[in-house]
Length: 446
Image (cartoon, rainbow, N blue to C red; front, side, top):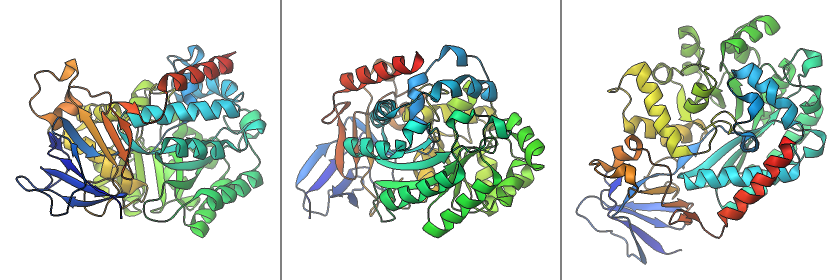
């Protein structure tokens, strides 16, 4: 058995009965230390948390890592979703292996530094030279020591077939199915504490066929993996579904055998009351992406109605060309403020927003071993130091984390190992990561 580490006397902690900290051994939390108490376990090491706000590791449930290469891209500025996508597809068709490697490394580094310990990426652009994109991403995640859920995205419905993307970035459906099976067998770990998982993620109703949606649902059941897609992000998407398939988005979800508890959806904004009820009964997950939804003027997710109906709500930063960042703690702040516009300040507390980014996101990914500081859970923990100028004069440390605008974590532990210390990624040169990434972004833009 490994050493027992007492994370001692935090300044504040987002947990119950852990005012004096917690004890970690190997990859798990083995004890919570209540106020005024000391650990019952014999301690090997002490980590002083007296100047730190401690939360469960933040969990990002929707992202597009490759989009870090096209942040603030001139032809995509000041557009809504469909014209924004059309302006970028012709750029993304030039992605290559080096671009995927360095964009994934940059995105995961940015997430780690913001307190994120588990990240899900939705990669769906596979030009002919990039069939092994997910393999490259898994390699990068191992280098950084972050927990991941890579979703094997896909687009099969090009412009020639009535879809939105150009033919250069779509694949034939048998290729998609075969590669999905290969990736599940190679990288999907069903065990508790899994560091790598795979889900199946046809991109959206306007870029894949009904048949691919149905085949993906069959694979999900056969291999016990989750399903993910964009749905009900914009009114344009709703109109597309009505014109192309003769049904609204949730009807289409049910028609393709996706309306069940292994499915989570990105955005989920434009659902009516009846659809919300059906999603809730099916225990579907919804990733709220507040910054992206504001940037593209898509709308506001009905988080409380969805939760009341039985759906699960988590958070995602979405792509770094519609955010344009990968900062998870800032996304929690955005979620809190955007949702307050809809529901009021008393219903959307800082604790509520944090719950979406932790327990909510973990539940959405069907990970009951993550998302809480609790005995038996994985030791994925974020530590924030309130020593920057914006925190001066703050009184409630946990509230200050969001209200005053934390931007970075001081330390991050994943599976019981520190991956960030003193706001630096352990054993990584961030300047080199940024430099390499910038070179690839310039190459893509040519």
